[in-house]
Amino acid sequence: MNFKLELPEDIVLINKKELKRVLHEVLLDLQAEKNVNDVMTIRECADYLKVSVPTIRKMIANREIPYFQKGQVIRLSRYDITEWMRNQSDI
Image (cartoon, rainbow, N blue to C red):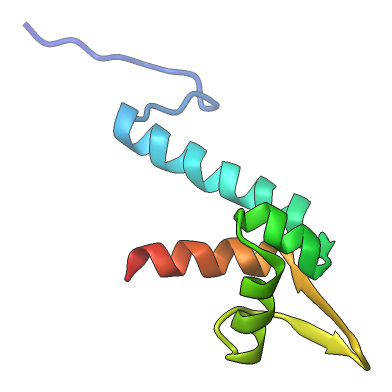
């Protein structure tokens, strides 16, 4: 018994695993867009990472965490911190 399934051109078939992967990528892209311009103070970063301010300052002094500085002002990008955490968990 032979049969032929015809679908409209705009219909795409995808398996569950592939759909999860694609949705995960889309979610990461949306989060990146939201966080890419989100800049934190040292206190905000400490709250975000649930550590103390001195811990963040020490990590900055040791260049263990991504940050940027304009004159005396130190800021941290939420996107860079999130990526840094993701890379740290891969080690």
